[in-house]
Amino acid sequence: MEMLEEIQKLKDEATSALGTLKSTDDAENFRLRYLSRKGALAQLFEKLKEVPKENKPALGKSLNELRTFLENEFETSRNNLGSKSPTSDGSLDLSIPGRKRYTGRKHPLTQTADEIKRIFTNIGFGIADGPEIEDDYHNFEALNFPPDHPARDMQDTFFVKSEEGKYVLRTHTSGVQIRVMENNKPPVRVMMPGRVYRNEAISARSYCLFHQVEGLYVDKNVSLAELKGTIAYFAKEFFNEEAKLRFRPSYFPFTEPSAEVDVNCFICGGKGCKICKYSGWLEIMGCGMVDPNVFKAVKYDENEVSGYAFGMGIERLALLRYGIDDIRLFFENDLRFLNQF
Image 1 (spheres, rainbow, N blue to C red):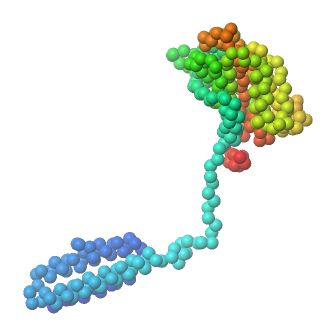
Image 2: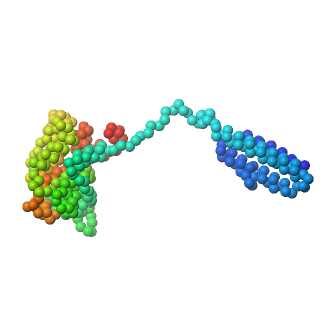
Image 3: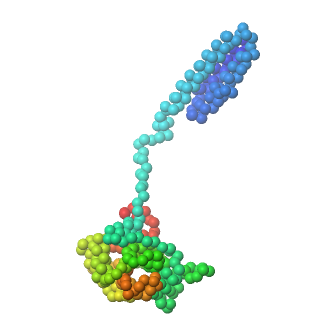
């Protein structure tokens, strides 16, 4: 009969197609072509409706046998595709070493800042933050900078053009001190970490952007002795018990009296190097007692309260901590340098 020939032809064609399956995509194309609801086998079942009744039993049996045969053969071929090893055709070489996973780590400046914050929060200091684009009042005027102070010069400060007034990229985080005192009554004990900007020549010792941490303590009867004790405690914790300090008289508009603090240079062991300018000492911070004019600016009664302030550069402390001789290395993003930390 004609339909029996079509059944045998479809079986031969499908069997031949099964032998050419190379991928899961080939298997899916075979299923759609022969075994889907609109495939070749389904079309033969549709033709079964048109044959004479006396021929349907035999043809129906042949079609069911063909469907069972194709489904079983297809399932076997598809499973064989999935069980093939990726090494059998050379596409995967298990002898090749795996790729090393690189995990991220904190930048050495972040590590240094975290350690500074840990030391001061352990003795009761809070942490405050403020804007990096600061107005002239908070960056200079409220901190007792006179109008002709060199820091207001274009050669030292990055000024920002604005129709609203005079703004600068903050030259220190001292402006945060003003903002904290404007919004809080004494006692105040807070530290202020952040980025600051200076129009300086880039060298091994200086950069146009650096990170700073300032501290402020205001209360009744705060003394210079407390300031020295706090800084000595920090130096012993941050460096080691053998750290040596030197306080030198200095001048800052917002503190009086003022001092600069030096620590013995651990890079050269005090013998002298280009980082310490061959002096054996390296300045780590400035400090002093808060000037009464600063208290007036924030509406504190200078006769009732006193306080101290200090500020230090994180880069300079990191240079000492890790024995690095060039501040520019912190900003070059060289993984050979950063991976050491």
